[in-house]
Length: 165
Image 1 (cartoon, rainbow, N blue to C red):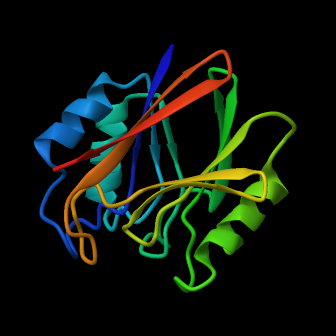
Image 2: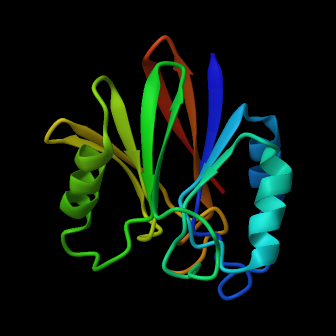
Image 3: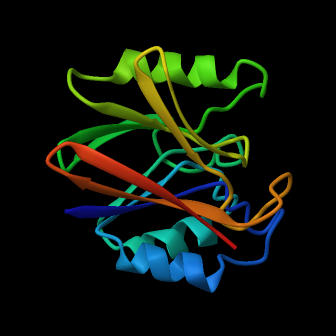
């Protein structure tokens, strides 16, 4: 079984001061971490890299133009392909836009789209695509609380839980 911490929209220092201790612990305990972008500073990117170790998949968000990160990337763990993109753009049409990116990048088999940008938790399926959005790991506005997801994957089976404080 592979345990994946899914976080994003940390926005440090523009909207938050630090990554909460409980999020840090979940990332350190995970086998792999996905960050959906909007680190907001090089220090935050470095901190997440340190917490995650070598097992980090990350994309650039609209607040991260200075980082040498891809805008879309793919990682396979436990028989599930995760296509990761920030989801930059208007909130209106967000799900359709991100689902289009996921379908464009996806290989055959079980693919899950992971994105951020809205700071709102999302776990939905539509048009053959499952979309996950972990919200904001720091509770950055417009989020009301800090949230993240833990995905457990084994032999192509995926279970996702939301953690919130």
